[in-house]
Image (cartoon, rainbow, N blue to C red; front, side, top):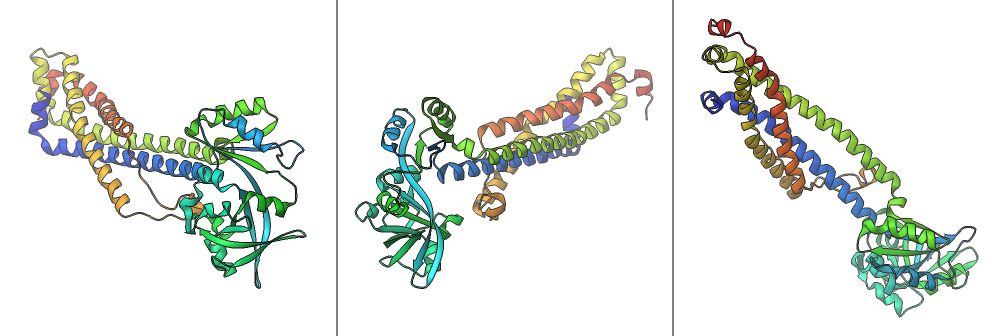
Length: 381
């Protein structure tokens, strides 16, 4: 009976299917955009920073026993890289040009597995710093501002100390650090800081980034150093993402309600057009429960094609976004382009959404049909 109703009124069925399909497409696309945005934020966070940072003890400025500390960290099975690092601020001078810089002193053989520095080097080789103590890798924009190029010598100046360094390469990370970043050998940075054989932090990279909190808690319990995971360092960003997810749930609910009203309206119109037919069925002995089942079945049958069509539309739009990237201001959104990540779970949710909205929207019209008076329904023109 439900199939006959649908075949006899294809335009109404198409309207119902399209209304749900559009809602499904919007929700799938928004979920994909949110997942892509969240993924890009996390990727940017974990790729541009160590997964765990171990800083000095309370009331101390530096870590002196960093080799022993590094050995302790290597005991954890998820650890892929450990790099003692000495960070600081200085002035870079070349001829008459002077710029403020942030330098990172580290052993290239340990720092490269941690931060994948060589992947961002556009000229030269980061490992050259192993063989040249007084050398440096500069950010591309910093090199432009200083008007210095590979092979030139420049000076790093901090307080009353000065260090002459040779530019052996340029690095481009695509972030604001390109305007101030300088990579040095650890020994050169220690000479500039004049604090002896110390580092300011030990960076750690993990195979499983979500193992960071448990390792951090264990290190904090075992040592007196200040240990923070990437989640601790990015807590504000992660809280912002959670807030955005809550807002999106409200948006999904509103889309659900709008689509539900569309389906309910179509089903009510079907019931009103078939009032006489319903009356005849009930006069022949059809129960109210059977009438409810007919119209609920008719409503639910339309869910799978609506879900399929909605998923297809969302997939096409997602591929178009990938083919024609939409650039975004990274200083505002923290990502440089819009990305869509469509997972299997998203499509499962889409099918569930379509079935639920059709079922919920069909309840009232079906109940209304089952409560009709057979005599009055048959007399309807």
